[in-house]
Image (cartoon, rainbow, N blue to C red; front, top):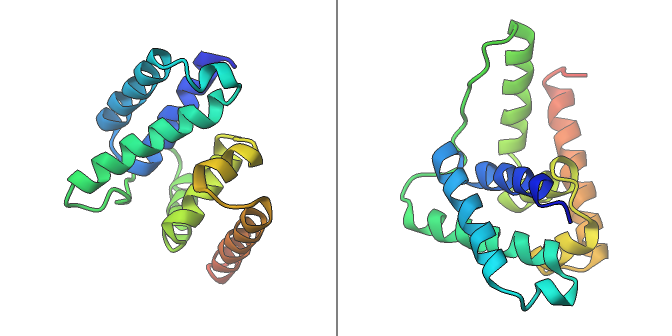
Length: 150
């Protein structure tokens, strides 16, 4: 497992969950500190699953301690107008999905986490994950089609 590559992916995962750069950096760092301190899962070949479990639990702890919604929409693009509009449409569509559907899509398509690891993180079967992924993608596609986004 390439630690540098996973560090970036864990950071993106935390940023998605918390929508705060500083918190995401802190949680990512804490995740790796806890990961490196414990050899239990490290030696059993379940490194990636353990890494995401630590990050998930730390994000949940932060979320529970906050009173505001961690998925507030941020617009930080200084690019062309089309990129901004595209970003807004996609973010809006994603925010209409459930938190679980958002997390599944992030893990599967942004961070490219293997299906078996996602199943372990979310504690669902492969079949259940497949159904949830298919449903989330269909909903996203329908929303984007309604927005006349092709």
